[in-house]
Figure 1 (tube, rainbow, N blue to C red):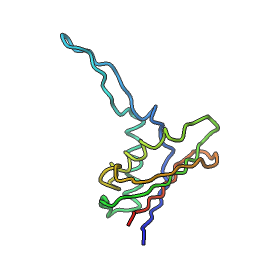
Figure 2 (figure 1 turned 90 degrees about the horizontal axis):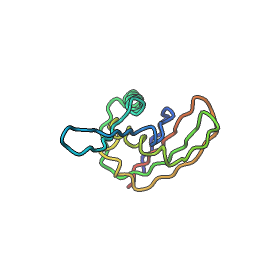
Figure 3 (figure 1 turned 180 degrees about the horizontal axis):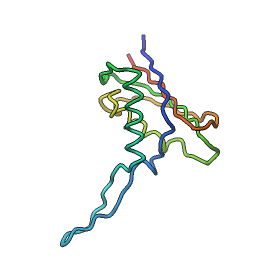
Figure 4 (figure 1 turned 60 degrees about the vertical axis):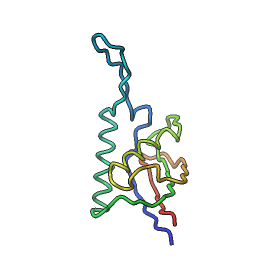
Amino acid sequence: MATTIKLVLPFPPSVNDYWGSRVVMRPGKRPFIQTFLPKRGKQFKTDVEAIVRAKYPRLTPTKRRVSVHYRLVAPDRRIRDLSNFLKGVEDALTKAGFWEDDSQIDAFSMERGPIEKPGRIEVEITALD
């Protein structure tokens, strides 16, 4: 029998807001592009970890393969690409200790929910046999 866990998380930053990049200039060396996690991405990860740890205080990362269903409930009617919201959520769940690595996801699906403030993402994770 498969085990399924449901989480309701805050509305995530899109991948466009989740990662930042900047050009780093070094005297006498070639410049390079540095990728970093801006304040909004760090805050989302921290918030997700707090939610997961409050709901599952004895959680240890699963080693099992999983299937994930996402439902994005936007706070407003702006046009959004659904797939731009996946990576931040998966990285946050990894940091929260839900699984060892998001490469354990064998299948996922995503749907757009209704528009409701303040927005959220509903996550349903099923451990595969």
